[in-house]
Image (cartoon, rainbow, N blue to C red; front, side, top):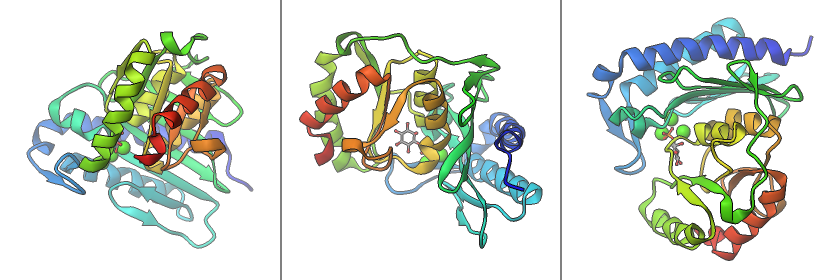
Length: 266
Ligand code: IPD
Ligand code: CA
Ligand code: CA
Ligand code: CA
């Protein structure tokens, strides 16, 4: 029997709840064990690793034949797996480190290369964003319908920056061109929450270059199911080159301006 997306969602809701409690309850101790990864801005704490282990172990115990891709432990392959899980145990680790209440556990289930269920959970606010492909997006059971229709000049746009310092300098140059053209800019610090905030209209749009599947898999489904268009550069699907989420009417305008400002040279 093919995997039921609702059952996958229920498992993701349960495991993200357990991981969320763990990261929240162990923060004080976990932030004393901080390592850096690709650069000094790219941090990982003991809680990122512990939460990743909790979710991966829980998934493989419940569904031994599935594959998992996690930010901290990489690929857990399974021959002929029907379902691949995509996990970010803490999206927004820098916020976590500083006690800024904007971080999330993000877990998505992919079947045949397509994300069919996703959960993004903020363990501090308690807000849980869920989506099943074709069945809408919800925050704590309330249906999400995206931001109001807005022109670019009135749009509140979020973005994020790569950990690599040279790329950051170029990304800052693109942002300098964008800032005078929009209502304002936000840098929330957690890509999964950026996408969910756009889904519920706390933001009008979000874009970022250089992010990974675990950053956007669940949040992009939430945004799509809330009626946003989520895509990449020049008609490509959302990916490393670009993740852009906005109402369909705003998407092309923002995309074309980002290209004009040189987003693809960053
Ligand atoms: C990061 C956050 C941040 C984004 C970075 C991501 P992490 O994820 O989502 O907002 O700008 O590109 O790497 O490392 O905190 O899981
Ligand atoms: Ca990270
Ligand atoms: Ca992340
Ligand atoms: Ca992370």
